[in-house]
Amino acid sequence: MIIGLSLSAFTTLHVVLSLIGILAGIVVVLGMLAARRLPGWTALYLLTTILTSVTGLLFPFSGLLPSHVLAIISLVVLALAVLALYVFELRGTWRWVYVVAAVIALYLNVFVGIVQAFQKVSFLQPLSPTQSEPPFVIAQLAVLAIFVLLAGWAIRSFHPTQRVATP
Image (cartoon, rainbow, N blue to C red; front, top):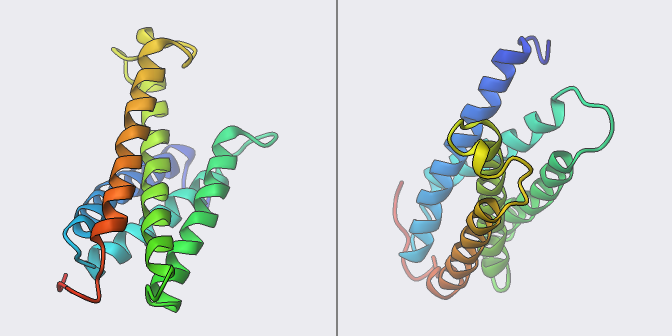
């Protein structure tokens, strides 16, 4: 049992949080590209993505795993995003710190989603059983390239003091 839930129920909670975080993160990044803050979506994105990383660290394990390292990196990046947005209110360089941190956190969630898909989805497993085969590598590199482009575009586009939208 983890936080009073069976391992199965806890895993479901973790996956649901992750999927909500990814969906909300996509909406937030699209909002950035349109210079919109979308405060409700942003709060949902940050909360569910933080909870995804925290719940990921609560699974029973022996030793430090790559998934734990990613969760810790994600939490550090998310702390920067929260500070930039809610403490420093996107002033000065904190605007681009927020944009980069928010995009990196979303990328890490999607990265893990791709890993999980290749591990658990029956038609993807044979394509990359060790996750070092070309289909896996190509998928991860394509997603990385997309997120690098999105981050650059969002840094140029996201100037919320010029245009603020309601949730």
